[in-house]
Length: 230
Image (cartoon, rainbow, N blue to C red; front, side, top):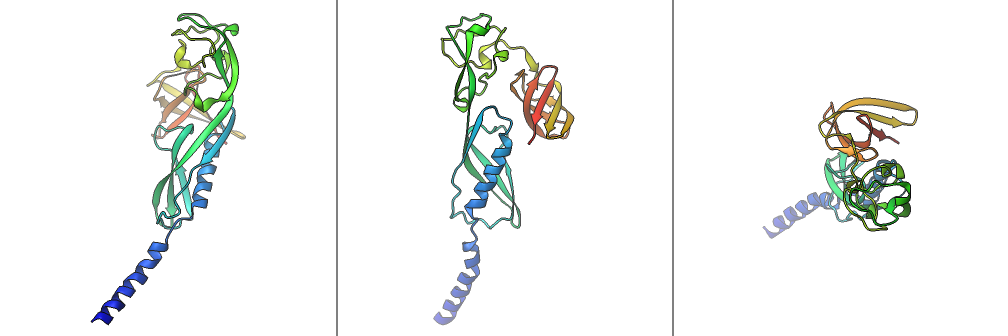
């Protein structure tokens, strides 16, 4: 009986061995996430730096030959995020990989104290170089986004200037039908959609297309949202 039990136990271990050894190599996972983020950040202003975090080597996931990366709903490629990755073949699974995106570029700051209600002129702002991802998500980057608009609040001199600090007329209003213009090398496609958020000219806006897909682009005057594709 002990001999039969030992043989049965050995057979079970041999059967489980391939499962225990089925681990996904982290290298192609991290490479896929890096490729995905490179595509997603090409339209961002400034110099983009992408750092993909670790993917556990003892993950116990079946090796994959076809990946698909995605961002969870509402997440934009900005700062510290988690990127989803799915295996499409041969065995489906999903996991998340940490990543950090830093964008270095120019943003607006006040040259002197600004009072609430003050109309900003060219002399009231200047451009400063730094990490955009360390600023407010709606930090302004071009003087045309601020000059001629009134301040909603008082601001100290040298303060980074955000869209929320100014009374900006909305280019896109939540619930409004909009035209989504997708542009890429040698092509342009127009789709109809509905704005899911209000945004001033040059700000990011989310849109639900007629197909139900939710996309993010840049709001432009006249109810237009632009998307730049690689």
